Length: 381
Image (cartoon, rainbow, N blue to C red; front, side, top):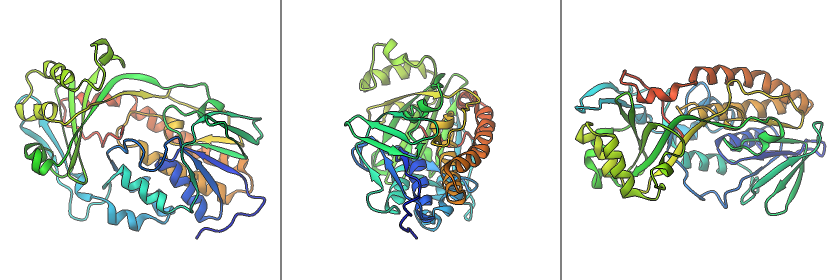
């Protein structure tokens, strides 16, 4: 139950209305603390909401339990999305097939847009302020901090939580680190109304995900709800490889022609993922923060999710962001000062993220491996 905070309660600003930021706000409100969430999008439906996410029992689902939303998530999730297929790139033969058991719920799928709506609907009216692009965070380490926005607005806060993703503005107040390209690029493509318009692709992918790789190139296809399938075309190379080819991601037909050259020798059935998608492509060069990424603890600012520990998008990002968010909110509810809460939160979050960063360092190239490999579910979208 949401209660009215006392006058002495800290002023908490969360920057970023993704799953991490919204989870943090929800858990705070359940414990009687108020936070305002600021997001640069014009509204909840603004932009590409991305594809599907698999939420794990030990982190993403655990966070939803703290948020009081696990039961509703269970109704919305797609356990059939846990199916995984791997094909031989050359002949299209099925090499590996995981069929989830009827009661398997370790990592069910949910569309990112549905997860965001679930979290947004759980918040008190007015919690999220849209159209607020943060340009900087000022103020002393002991606080308060001053947030400056592109529209000229200024907000003071006792604690600023950076849930603003890979290119976090809040991070600059704590750390000089910037994400670096890891030498792997995704091209995102979509198929719509697949059962009617693309039945062969629907049959190939099944109810969950399908992948193929030949050691140099890879394809990863993922079922979404509503008759949609999202495909990642996975290649190594510089981040500006499209520009070097004289193309932008709006040049759909030219990109298709280039990809067919690069994927010569692949099974015709798999090549449908390159030739039949509906365009345009979305170029997603992959970046990661240095391993490990740390900073001096501040009583007035902290980070969660990709802002704290950007890693290759192999199915862990949203889960860690939501777990970070839940643990930070609980620390704020259980400690007398924001300094104590932040210190307790970071003492757990940073070692955990370091272990995961180290484990996933270089793992994105596993999407190109010919070995039987379940990479999780890319969540770059």
